[in-house]
Image (cartoon, rainbow, N blue to C red):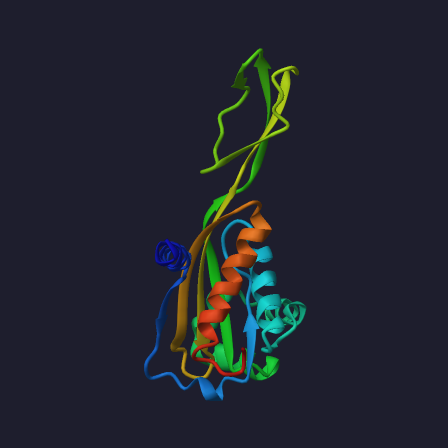
Length: 204
């Protein structure tokens, strides 16, 4: 029985691990400071803020995101302009960053709540449920209403790019189902940063 429990636990952990890819030629030792750009997609700004916070909490030297947006606006640049090597190096020099982190929200199903009407022991939904899993709260057959809440599903893709060379150093993807949007993003962030820490020794 104990072996079965351990196996189930390890299987569960494996299921929620991010997919990662590492540039085998990357020299992570020269990366001392990173700049996290706004992620694309819904809740992209929230995602980049949480990634930035998670990196900082794990010991990374992270450029203030307000400074990044200020500099991009002053130079009248968008994230697509960073593809240009000279522009990328110029921004890196101004920010004092060795790498940039970009990303996108590829899946977004926010948590939702619905009021259910019930009659006796039966109840029905006013609107269609959209979450993967459903939690029933406050269900009482003696009353005529109940509250149902669905979970949030988030998919997050992230890249760490060397400012000097433009090479992708680290790339990760993970999707996760959490009780709400922010907790799902926080969980993904922790797993991705933990994976990055195996290669980038500035964080732990």
